Length: 318
Image (cartoon, rainbow, N blue to C red; front, side):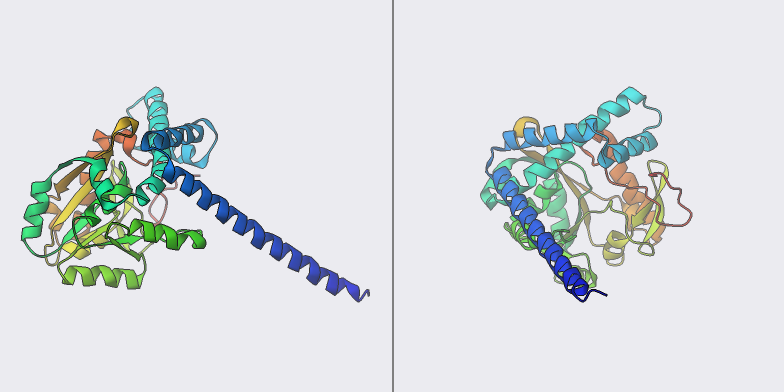
């Protein structure tokens, strides 16, 4: 046996490891450069680029287009193929804007964020909730521009938000720092993060989270969403129901041509505070569904909202 073979194998692996390391560093550097460039563009130009990216996602055989079309056909079965194709295009173009406008918003100072919010509908609801002195739970569905809701609220209130860390570890710290630039505090979706959220509520502060993400099995219940069984988080209900902490649904409607955002707030109905967790989850989904039906083009349909988690769920996304 050739004694040089193990050495050659080790050397080859070392070269491959170093190549992968340099490639990863190059990809991270390129991604950071793209984020900086998007942050410097005017918002109208920025969103135009996002629309083009979304249009490409629609026209090409992408996973986003595939999932979007399935979701639209499931949720709007009575709409024709033409409507569903048109809505798929519009929704993916709006989703493209989410990708490009986030770096722009992350660099904005608090006063810039406030200027971008052209109107706030429901301020009286927020004032009433704050007057109870129990804290407030803000929930923001994947509708419109959810990035600006926490940035805007952070300029006004002590706010702790739950988030999922970036898959690119080198970008997680700068992204989290940027999202906290206007005053909000971000905590990861882990046990320690949940404890931080509970601690904020005990201090009668505000917390925020996205309510229309499918939780891991065992952390949710099946509840109807567009008449389909969707595995639904019960975290919001468990935070709020016991002490009847006010829950406000908040979302930012994206105006065309970079003209800013309109923030809408509404209180959750009394039925949401039912101690039956399945009833509470169903009311949560129904409330979000009503908003989505009014603005389907600004909802992120590329998320696998009906993916199989519970054994009794069907498989839609194969």
